[in-house]
Length: 109
Image (cartoon, rainbow, N blue to C red):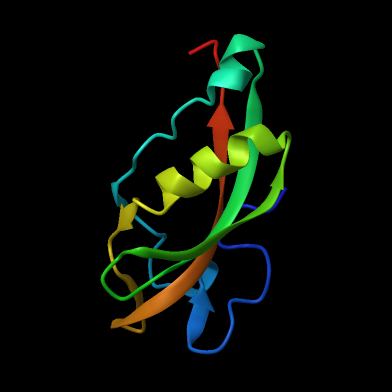
């Protein structure tokens, strides 16, 4: 499984998180709502989501790379779109970056 910053090509004007001066730092992380259907069935799961972080630390263009069950995907995308990061820096300059992040769903917590 790819780690943070790995995955598909980041695209023009966006660098991979592995090329930042420092690892991406979360400012705010909203937990996804556990889907009712999955909770009722006792399902755990994981979604690997990839997204761009803009120069102000906002998440843009989030999409699912893969998941253990599609029931978790919409909740993950809603939550990740609200996450905020410290702006990424490359050679001291603020830049957009792309990263991948797994999101876990577990009823055992």
